[in-house]
Image 1 (tube, rainbow, N blue to C red):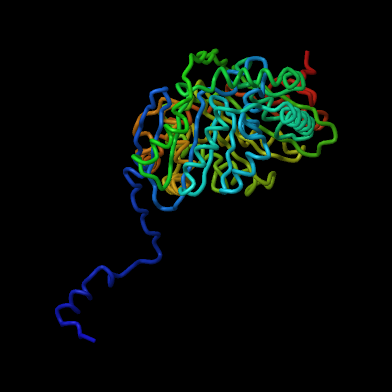
Image 2: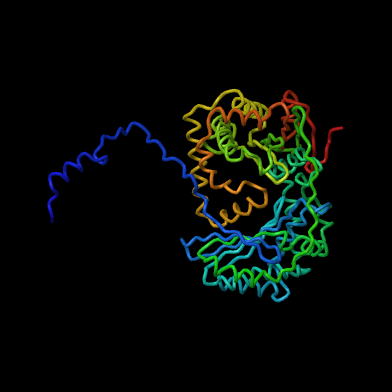
Length: 470
């Protein structure tokens, strides 16, 4: 073994490795990466299908996500129709019945599933890169050639009716439905399934919806994984290039309503020993300019264990197991909600404490040490999410769907890490109102109504969400 020279030893001793470290002080976090979101390339096929390719060779897998730019907002009176379309895509095609489709998918270890949202329907698939050609074949078959078998539709409709009955006994679901109706009014964003809307959905309506909105010029495809752009694009064109473009009806854009004053909406649930609380109001659309910073505001208020609602309602008062808040953002608008579940006797105090915490954010700057924790939490969560190829695909397509700036996710972490106390206070003043808000409570009316009347005018509903107040 060679001995280190005296010069080398002296240099080593003077290096930072031997610097004195004050272990009583928490080390400063590294700055957020300036551009942590992966690069991607955009191509448009002759039929109008926009394709995003994100090369990622960390694992030998491929993820596909097709986004149809039509969702619940285009259902008309048949609320829940788009969910039936999504749920039945892989239940049989013109070339494969449901059993054959499932068998071929299972053989290569791929699941092709779809989901419907307010503004779009997504179809996803993922598997080993060596099966890319076969995955695309099955994927295209489900998207282009579904037959929506009558027996599969009947099965899904029975399940939907059963779920609807079960939801009447789920306070959280009741609160969520009523809150949406109050915030959005007659806008499609506030619609929810009922026995009448389910009966109105037929197989013919499903076929019509698919034929009307599933078009390549009304869709984008994200491809993420261990692929080369020059190799995967011909495979995509082979699978989806024959998809015929067509004219697609423009989505309805009805105006959203606002809220005036404080109102309380109480769903009477006889025998309930606890109340589900939801404070709700209109919120910003998905393309609002403050989205990254709003994550930090929301985390400070009700993002989890370190949020003020959790610390107040659970840790300080012991009134609940958890208290949370969230901004739900869609293409045309959104909603803010703060929620908790409490005992009957503390329902009104819990509401008042929630409103107090909302007001505190409006009136006082957040202390720097508290804000540092929330900034780090949000940046860390975002960076971890970039390990998920489906999340990457979703975000790339969101840029197109919602008209976000091209560098939106490139600057996302940096913007969250730079939020200041004064910014949070200004955002709270802009987006959190305690003067124009609706309070939804699901609980036993005779137990909680007298105290709620001191907060605002109380409207009472039954478990069918029909008004009992004249």
